[in-house]
Figure 1 (cartoon, rainbow, N blue to C red):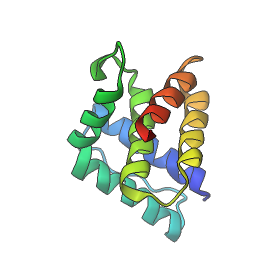
Figure 2 (figure 1 turned 180 degrees about the horizontal axis):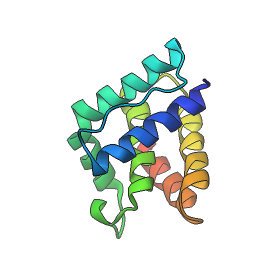
Figure 3 (figure 1 turned 135 degrees about the vertical axis):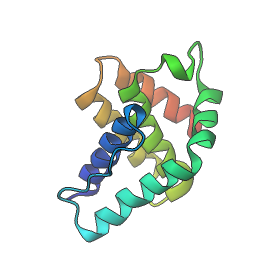
Length: 123
């Protein structure tokens, strides 16, 4: 499993937790290195979710957290965790990966919104 696939797995797990917080984490196909990466993301999600929400909220313009599409929010949360807590990859890579997830899973305009929001967060 590539790092991109690991992010996708983390995104799907976080998205499912928005609807069922007690849902089990799924690690199908994750090798040891990427399993650790996914677990790191999920650990930070559990430990810092309120802080992450506050950071996202502070950069939203004409939006509230509750108005965000849950798919977009899950993608943004994964990226923020990587940017703020894991810091293994360049910011540009993290943002690009989030944009690609949005293109794959969200609306036609979401990738532009996510790109702008994450760019603002990293300033």
